[in-house]
Length: 245
Image (tube, rainbow, N blue to C red):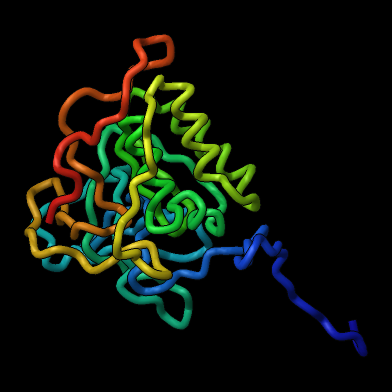
């Protein structure tokens, strides 16, 4: 209105020495990992729906494989234009999973400090999980319903302290896993949700394999997965060799 000032604010809450956002929106940045699906196939590449008010495009230049309409991919943001168009790079196809949309500003809580929360979700559910900075979580595995419950718990309690500990206890009660300590990455990924890709090449239909500490690189697992609730109780033991380059 004429003569009146207009103010914009972000709702937040102080928790100890941290400022926790309670509302917000996604501002795409180069280097972010985003998850979406191929919404249109063009001669020069692919339009990708990333569930945000931005046009995302993956060029087919230098790609050694093709994508089909509707296929889910995770990719890095290469650049963002002045008109907020997003160019993607290093796509990887995600097969046989489910997508869950969350508030983008709660993604850091789902990932956790030094990846502690996302590592706990993977370890205690046995699921393959990727988290996009655009607020899309993709997961695959037998414990899909448990993954959804845990993520919704994180969303509802994102503003509280001690959340990782409570989520771990919840998952332990559901799976029967004991003596688990959240696994952390010694070198945090910083402000964005991805790091530079590794040197491994692309395979047909597989996309490029990413580096050892990418937010969206899943662990290669070996051995048994957690049992469903009601099974024998057992102690947690790390499976496989963890992340690999």
